[in-house]
Image 1: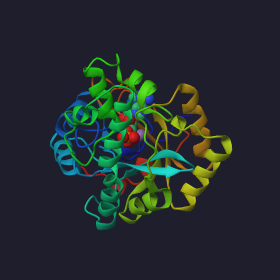
Image 2 (image 1 turned 60 degrees about the vertical axis):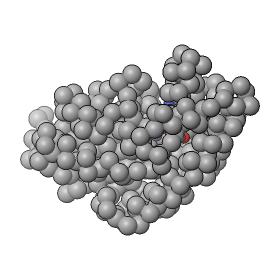
Image 3 (image 1 turned 60 degrees about the horizontal axis):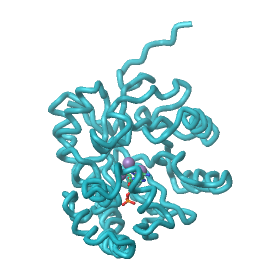
Length: 296
Ligand code: AMP
Ligand code: MN
Ligand code: MN
Ligand code: MN
């Protein structure tokens, strides 16, 4: 049987949407304009820049995308603390000037500098001096110093061979450069996004080390707060996780999202737009928020 064609290209289940990546405004290495050009060159048909806890790159990203004829959704990735774990919530299609959202993001960014100093103190105890200053060399946005910047510094200074090794040896829970941190609350992050007109999406659920019960609680509470979607196809999922979270999307009646989580040509496994299609049996988040898509 032939499936009836869609009126709008954006409604195609095989739309090359990439709704998750990072620029120099957070922990990526490319400027918003360079990401827009790379997305376009890679065949992306709908794009969102989702810097961590920041919307400072949104106007540049949107202007560059629209100039290239690339439809754009506003984006961010909010750091949240849930059940003792850091969870990331993607916001899509919101008003980037929304006062409450901007204040919430600023508060979420607020603890990063002290955390970075504490991380450096932990690293100094195991003989790595000057890591704060070293990490700062890779930071473009002074409010957004992240573990990724420490990782780049420790690779460039020869301590580890790659960023993966840095995280494993130094920057994950229980390791010398890891500092527990209190991020935003789940309900707040979802509300900031929703009340600014956007859709909240659980980022890369396969990355969290939750028990089945904790994961169920995350999905249930996220929905109770007004969350709309889940990333099914992302650069951080295995093929088994595509299937698992496609099932979870159906079970919880969530919209499905797709995004590479691209950070850097040298570090990222998955390039912009270079992902498997979203399974056609799911409801893509971009269809539900089509009115929020900005077009050339
Ligand atoms: P932060 O927000 O400072 O805790 O930094 C989190 C960022 O570190 C994530 O968004 C990833 O870009 C990066 N990251 C986290 N875990 C790893 C890992 N195991 N290997 C490489 N990068 C990672
Ligand atoms: Mn990151
Ligand atoms: Mn993330
Ligand atoms: Mn990300």
